[in-house]
Structures are given as C-alpha cells and as structure tokens.
Length: 315
Image (cartoon, rainbow, N blue to C red):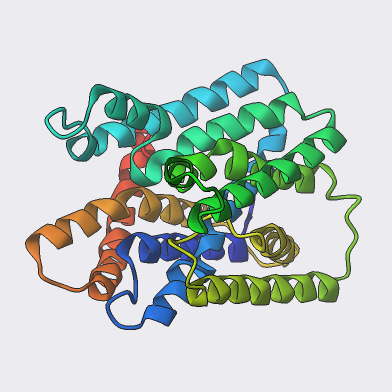
C-alpha cells in the first residue's frame, strides 16, 4: 500500500472542522471580532485548499475514459448526499419549482462543492495541455469572483437589485470563480512539481505572509461600516492556499493509514445534519453547537467509513 502524506491528511481534517465552524457560526454568540476573524476569515481557506488537493490528484485523469469514470464517481457521491438531505431542501410548499431546480443543479448547502468540482474538473481537462492559457484564465476568473463579492458587499452599483444579485452566494461561490482557479492550481502543482524548486523558507514566508494578509483583509471588512455581509472570496486566498499546500506537500511525513483521508470527507458531508438536529432539539448557543457537532461528526466518520467499504458512493 502506498503511503500517504500524514500532514496533508491531518490538515484536511482540521479544515473540515473549520467548515463546521463556519456553518455552526462558531463564536458568533461570544465575540463579534473573534467570530469574523475566524469563520469569516481564517476558516475560509478550507474550501479553496480542498479544491487544490482535488486538482493535484486529478493529473492521472489523462483520457476521456478516465474522465468519464471520475465524473460518474463524483456524481454518485453527489446524488447520495442530495438524497440524504432531501428532507431539508425538497419542500414544494416552501420553495418554488425554480428554486428546487436550482438547488438540484447547484447543490444543497455545503454540497455545492461537488457540482463545483465537476465543473472545475471539466475545465481543467479542457486546458490540461494549454497550461499557460489555463493558468491565466484561472487567475482572471478568481479575481472576477473577488470583485463580484466585494461589489455586492459594498454596494458598488447604484441599483439595489444588482447589488443584491452580486451578493447572492451562487454568483461568486461556484465552479467558475473558486472551483476552477484553485483546482487548476493544484493540477499545475502536480504537473510541474519536478520544475518547482523553491526553498522551504521561501514557501514558509509566503504562507505566513498570506495568513497575515487574510487576517488583515477580514479585519478590514469587519471594521468597515460599508460592508454588508460575510466573505467567501478573499483576494489573499490566492496567496495563502497555494503556499500552504506547497509547504505541506513537501513535508516528508507519511502514513500507511488510508482511512485518515476519509475522515475529513465524512465530517464535511455529515456535519450539517447534526447542526440542524441540535438546533431543533436543544437550546444551545452557536459555539456549543459547533463544538458538539465536531464531536458527533468525528464519531459518525467511523461509521461512514465502515459503510463506505461496501457502498463506495458514500465517501
């Protein structure tokens, strides 16, 4: 069995926990600044980092047959979890047919990641040989997503309806503006890994600088009275996420434990269920719900991994 990168798998678990913090609104009931710097700041590295990891391992998909198999696998994963959460989104008495159709297309809640990854993978496959154009396009699309997010949150347009549209999550948080840019960067890292020869201290410096920029960017938005919402698309993410990935992937710490990689996936997919359940049956605050959800999701990951041995479409 091929050994896995222990630090990468452990980091993915930590990032999945950060996603729990985002959806559980960790610290919102205790400290406004702490909430914003964490859930609306630091924790936002999670999803772009996951896209980079997925893109990094996508390099083995080098023909249409492999791509078809990959797409079928991700689609099966998507269908399973959409059915699992169907009680929470298939409510004709509350939502119009167009809203339900949009949910099916884009994904319920956190499941948007899977359609976004499919779109990102298809674009990456199309630009797999023309890497210069693909890289330039990925950066331009990322910057466009950042501009859309900021224009919505800061009411750049004179028309209220345009500002509200720009601030709609699916307008900037999708396969085009987050999925493809980071997925393609991961793809490039693997394709060019023999050509990338950067000293570890340089990568560490860039990672630290990116972290400080992310914290500053979130702090700036928190203190700006013209900001009307949270953020998914931070400009500094394009610095910290790739640098952090390079730093981790070059660490020579391995493990033969394959299941460790599945823990992060299990936590990611199951955690909203526990958040919704705890909100319904308890009167706990957001921070306590977040912490309890982490524990319940971690415990459930053991069960989901066991189930995945038989049903490969779960994780």
